[in-house]
Image (tube, rainbow, N blue to C red; front, side, top):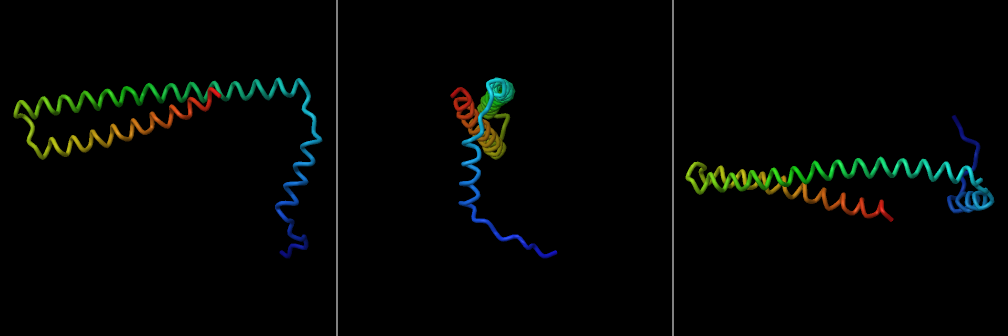
Amino acid sequence: MDCQRKALQVDGVEAELERYWLGVKVTESAKVGIRRVLAEELDEERAEAESERRVLQRRVQTLKDERQKLLDGYYAGAIPVDLLNSEQDRIGRGLSEAESRLGKLSVKFERMRE
């Protein structure tokens, strides 16, 4: 299939689209509808972010509790050093991942408030 149309310059297309949309007037009722839809979407995003934040905070606390129990077991002589080290590595990775995700959620949450 041979295309007979000429290629268009992206800058020209963008300029033409900009000119078109500058002339479009959004009615007040459309603005209200758009704001409502955006507010609903934002509320959903906030609820999801808050839910994930709670899950991650519980995960962080669980891992910290595990770390303390691990140390208690080691001090009591019930856990060998090699197991202590591997479990500390696992817990450290889990904490790092959860705290990193919490930080990203905090940034996202702050942006949503703006």
